[in-house]
Image 1: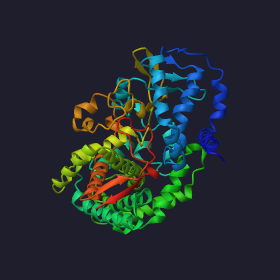
Image 2: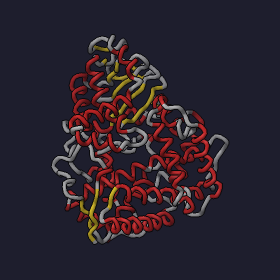
Image 3: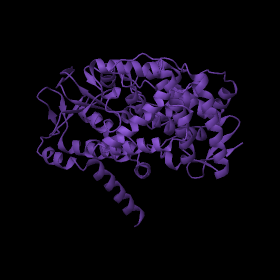
Image 4: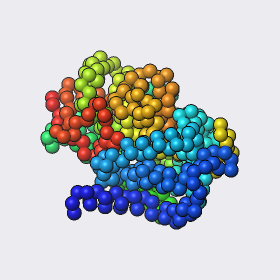
Length: 475
């Protein structure tokens, strides 16, 4: 099969696989009126704009994998520049419909798309009430491996589970209270990774990610979990099913084996691990600690992907790489590495690992031009706000300074870890481990991208396929 036909086939397969259940909805959408306003006064998208949004924004994201990435589809998205096209589609909708929120004429539910930065900040600041993170789509997906996780919880259960997550992950502190035990684990895994890369002749995704997964398991569950590949295989399989949300049967037996295996580590409570740290955190009958851990193992994927992309950014920005070397040379024990953290945050801004932030309204909400019914799904498309080159001058370039000045990030919805009361409780732990891993890998050596993969600093790509990155290691 020639390359253009192969690309078309892969895209069609991904879109059909991700949106097979949308065919019935499409028949009803076809009966919808053109652009206008809802009975409550908010702008309503036309049929053609709704279909364009589905094809150019929703389909590529879901095809690439919302819960776990599908490498062939990520490669295709990079090749066809699909994520940049998605941002351009969102810009067209904003220019046509104004501030919004834009209501979509869907047959099975009320759905809104956020177009205005102030509205994005409002939705995030007013979560979990009236904008609940436990949206219908999220429930269908995450129930495959954490049905009682904090993200799917409401009311008193959510409050308790959120408290427990924040206590375990030490959310408020840039350096986790267990940093003295965690950072040596990062150093050990980085050394082993570099040794494997020297044997291979380069540092590729497989070598990078496997070292990270070992380190995560040691940090979260203890050293005895370092080589528990069966646990990793379980969550990978469950996340693969979660990509299909409610269209894939729930594998209850596998999920229970997975949760039981986590419980074994929590019962062991190894010293120096989060499992050991958690053992001393108060809980009640609704806390469900073993159901909180899968989210951590899942969310750490953001660190693996973003830090590998951060290496590519540093390779293409020599001045920033020099600043990183100076920061590493002057680092003090258990002290944040602000520029390396900013580099990771930039990788997450440029290529968000959570591109769709979903909420669902629990009550009627009022906006400048109208109101939104209770039960409305609300979508914030993070790449649109992160890469809107009509409003953000740094949209398509590497700009770590955005994260070195807290006020800059507050002025615009840059939300790689979401924001507001429902912001990711593991943000600081992820950044601590990511910056530490990068510091250990880059200390005293240079990593260079393989020929043909170097990034253009003047126009960074809309999608960066982390699975095909490969670095030479120069000691």
